[in-house]
Length: 139
Image (tube, rainbow, N blue to C red; front, side):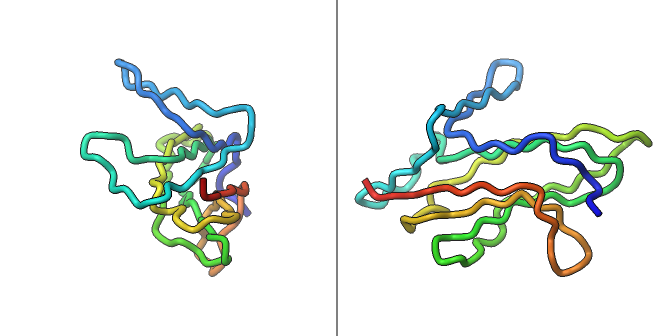
């Protein structure tokens, strides 16, 4: 059984930070499609190298591990993406949220990716809270 309840899971193509540390997420009304450059370019130091932002919000009443699993177009998992360890400080359930930035290097191969927000458990299989496809094509 889940130790947390999912309230929101969004993919966004832009995030801005205000002077008070607030993050605004922006997403087009159409599906997000990442176009790969014809030649590989390394991120410029000081520039934002993120291509995509993942936002989630959960309610948790006990310790839980939330992670992002990404499957590439061949169905192979890209490991070590993002993980949060949630430890409620109160006896009542608390709301937690996070924004993860994903770099373009994760999406080098054109095709259909699937992003899963999961709760990791002590058993072998994580519990899927949400999933969304992402299509990457060459321009």
